[in-house]
Image 1 (cartoon, rainbow over the protein chains, first blue to last red):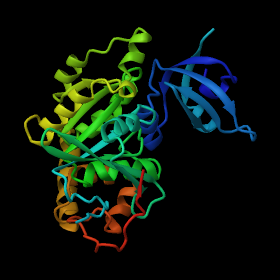
Image 2 (cartoon, one colour):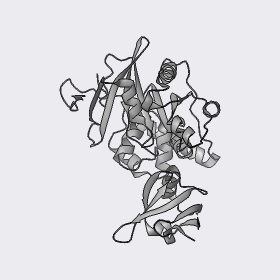
Image 3 (cartoon, rainbow over the protein chains, first blue to last red):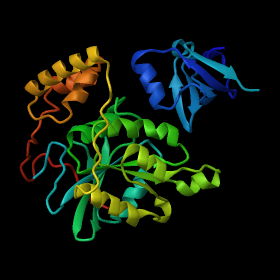
Image 4 (cartoon, one colour):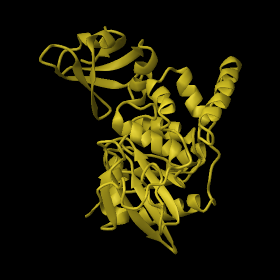
Length: 75
Length: 253
C-alpha cells in the first residue's frame, strides 16, 4: 500500500521511496528511507497534507507525494 | 573586524561553529561551554536568531557560534540556509557536529554532507546516556575510524565530556587533527561537467570557498544557490562593517 492510505494513528514501515529530485533528497535527509518506521499523526483540516512521525520528527507530506511512498502496514 | 556573517573575531584565536539536527542538545552544549559569556542577536538580514559566546580552553579563546538546527546542507528554509552558508562560506576553524546518539542514522546524513566540504570537524555524540537507557550502544571509536575525525561522547545536560570535547576542538583548530574532506566520487561525465562549472564559479566569485559544492548544487538546479551567486551573497573576502553601523542588536544575557 502507499503512505497516503495509512490512517491516523497507524504505524507502518517504509518499503520504497519513488519520489524524485529535491523531495527525495529531503526525505532521505530526514531519515525517511526503506525500512524506516513511520506513523500517521494528524491530518490538516483540509484533508491534506498529513503529518507523519519519522525518527522522532514530525513532517508534513502532501497526498500526491505520499502516494509515491510504498509502505507496509504494521499490525 | 567583522565579516559578512557579523562575526567579530577580535580577542579570539579561533571560530568554532556548532552544527546539528534540531533537538540534539546543541544549544545545551553551547550553554555548557560558554556559560554567561554569550551574546544573542540576529543573523544579518535574517529573522533567524543566533547566539555566540566564548570558550576558554588552556591558553586560547574560541568564539563559539551556535548555528540553527538543520537536517541537511541542501537547505530548506532560512534557518537551514544560515547554517549552510556559515559552514560553507564562514570559514570556521572547526565545525562541531552534534549527533543525537539515540538517532545516529538520521543525524549522520548531515554529518556526511559537512564532511564533504571540510575535514575540520569534531563529532559530539550527545545524549549518550539516553541512548544507553534505551539499550542503544554507539561505538564512538568505530565512527571515528570510519569518518577520520574525533568523536567524543557527551551528556551536555550534565556537562559530561565537555573537557574532552574542548580538547578535540583545540586539536582541530591548531591543525593537529584535521581530516581530508571526503570527496564524493562522481561518474566521469558528471565529474567533467562539475569541474568545468567549478572554474566558472571561481571566475564569478573569486576566492569563494567550496566552488565544487556550489557547482554540484547548480547542476542539481538549486534555486537558492543561483540566487546566492547572482546576489553576490557568496562573495568573499568579507566586507567589514564600520564600528557601530549595521551592528546586530546585542543583548548580554
